[in-house]
Amino acid sequence: MSGTLVVGASHAGIQLATALREIGDREPVTVVGAESLAPYQRPPLSKAFLHGSADTASLAFRTPAFYAEREITVLTGERVVDVSPTGATTDRGRHLAFDRLALTVGARVRMLRVPGAGLAGVHHLRDVADATRLRRALTGATSVVVIGGGFIGLEVAAAARALGRPVTVVEAADRLIPRAVAPVVSEFYRQAHERRGTAVRLGAAVTAVTGERGRATGVLLADGGHLPADVVVVGIGIVPRTELAEQLGLSCDRGIVVDRCARTSAPGVVAAGDCTVVGADRLRFESVQHATAQARAGAAALLGREEPVTEVPWFWSDQHDLKLQIAGLSAGHDDIVVRGNPDSERFSVLYYRDGALLAIDAVNATADYLTVRKALATGATIPAEHARRADRRLKEMLVASLDA
Image 1 (cartoon, one colour):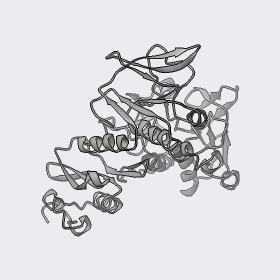
Image 2: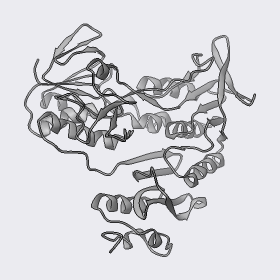
Image 3: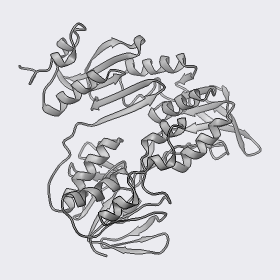
Image 4: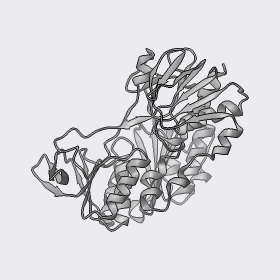
């Protein structure tokens, strides 16, 4: 074949293939995915799917007819294991030639490296098969330990509590979600989960998973404590898949290095999604929104167009009845403004650096979130001294610049 080969039937992969058609590409497009299922959405796996309010069929991105109408070939149940500048080989021995290549291979879960990590009853959550096994295990669990207090861990904890299971979250850092939110938000989530019956252990290192007859029975902590559990969920991060990129000699540094147009270090090769890091700062964006934007940029780049990602990054997390919405990048902030009372479970946190608005975390405060997201997208701002005025709505304080 000629045309474009998309390796990875991920959100980014399907968006990139679709974008090629939307911008007029008529050359063959083939998407190869390692999973046997048709391409599907992953975010609901730790939310609606675990709760039982979504099934496998509802996760599908598109119908078979959608791909057929656009002449996009989707190969499932095949993993690309070898790649060269002009062709790829799958684990079924199929050879796929191409003129242009897109790597949308995602990431794998970071494994827990302690004795007992391979026991039955220890779960990870990355794909439908993982989620199906975990949902089945939670229905019969007597006690659940979640290792990792990030978004995935807390969403799983919320799902397990909704099923009435005793849950303990174990986080090695001194606060929850430490890399993504300010301490005030971390503390809010600790208290909110504890109010709903989840125990939270901070600054707690796991040294082993204990077991009997091949099955997990608990988690051993560095301080000597032991937490009983017949279901252990590990959510300690992801590792971008770079094996194919390394075969091609592409620049990799904790991910496939791309520019804002999703171009790799090799002509005619783009990458998008969780497998990538962006620019000199090696930024990683683990969100569907960024994967979508990056995929569109990558499709344009394959056709010789320069359409860099300019959209404001955004993200959401549903835990119990708490909707967290994030817009912008808060890294490097030197000031925050808290609007509302965290105890009311409805508040927002605005982040600033040198007086410039960077980002917002909004908990059950969608109006604040939308206002800040609009400001970041249009180059407007909300001066911190104005944002501190609790008697005014944020949208009344938008100004064109800090000097306005």
